[in-house]
Length: 521
Image (cartoon, rainbow, N blue to C red; front, side):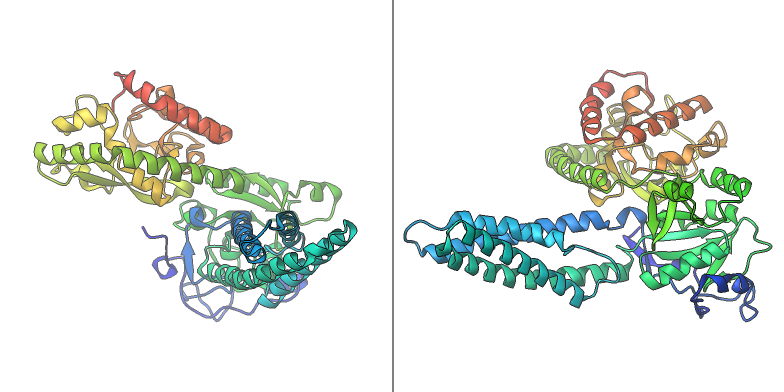
């Protein structure tokens, strides 16, 4: 699967003409009825539908991008400072290093103080450059006063040179940052996707605010009372009921599910939360009243509308960034070390039995995303289970389908080494819940149906190893008890995840594999 694909590939989205959005919340009650010009099978199009859909795991986060832009600016300004020192010294005598370094620090601080890294949709290029000018002006004023106060007037000239070089650098970089943000928003990489549950006046109010702010894209509306629901809300189509959402192919692309049913309808809201909790996506409740308790419950905002998280794992951008950097660094080192071994395994597989050395299979990952996982082939190529599409039958002890080389690489888990490429691609992590095959069955029953919280293990990227693996839950899960134990261990890891815990799990993986000859792998 590619990084993103055109939404024409989704049955949920069809071409058509959107109804114009209403400007005021009071008008939505009258508008919440089917559009007679669009029948049940008519093709419709919402005003917030993006031109393409990017997977939720590929979404660019504001804090991460802001940090990257800050570091890039700091590195460029450090280069400008170094250039200024060289220009002023001319290779003769000492350079005025102290005031130039002070100018660098003040300038970096001033850029942050004036929100020069603000990535909101309403940020125009003119506004961005205005912030940049204000930040540079403040930095120049502070530094000029400081130099005068300390009697260092002789240092004004070299500092001014540094400022001029820095201005040229910043006025080249920031239009580039602005253009990149604009392009990422247009492609759907930066704008979060949400779906709305409840075709209510609150839904219309939220969609109206999003149309004005552009802070999020609404992919569709779902309603638990579909018989009473309109065909669309403020131009956004109603795509089905709650059951349709739970099994919908949109979920890997959805960052948040927003329940817009009035929070005063407690029984209905509670029922929706319980039903939607099966999904791994973050679920928030639209806080539709102004009471102090309601405002206190609001822990996040979408288009200035208060939201309270009620289910799903909250996003932690800093932790996700650290985990991704850790994955890239360790996986690159492991790949370089393991390449000769991987080549030898590939040759042995080709000599042992006819067929390709590598095998791919559909697995479920973050937010129920389906992706191809790569492994060394350990089974006969003519077996139906090696088609990679479904793996309803799990591998058992002394399975006749496993080849001679396959028994060795499965026993040592060397067949998993190609998944390093899945990690580098971003589909998997080094540490996380093991990805299960799509449609995997335990005792004739689909494994996902045996545990109510099964989908919760998809709130994090799957891993090559994990907390469950080092606690003995490896290989097939052939009993309901084994499924429940693995899911419990996976959820425990998701709740405790940290960089240090990941390093501990990596360190314990090899001793656990070598010391366990009982697990079927």
